[in-house]
Amino acid sequence: MTSSKAFIRVYTLLETSLRLVVVGNCLLRLFDDQGTLRKGGHQLRLRSRLPLDENGSISEETLLNASSIPAASILVRLLPYTEVSVQQYLPLV
Image: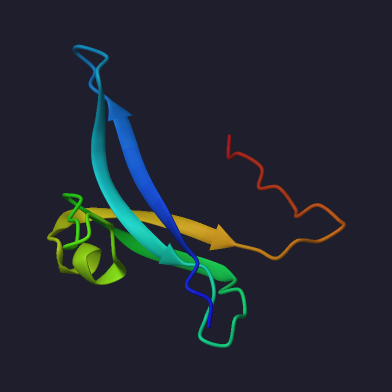
């Protein structure tokens, strides 16, 4: 089946120098084995380095074998396309 994945990299700015640095990386499979969108919420662990396989590519296996950053994750919500906009969350005041 399909092997579409989203590679997500999280950055931050150092407060003292305003230099952009990488916090971590993760990989999200977009479709299941039947080719259906994996809709809904996903919590992904951030990994501390970008391991490459023998071909110089990023693979799901090499990324999952990289050490995770303690207490660092990212939340992602996948939704299918609709003609009507999804309800926006209002900020708490």
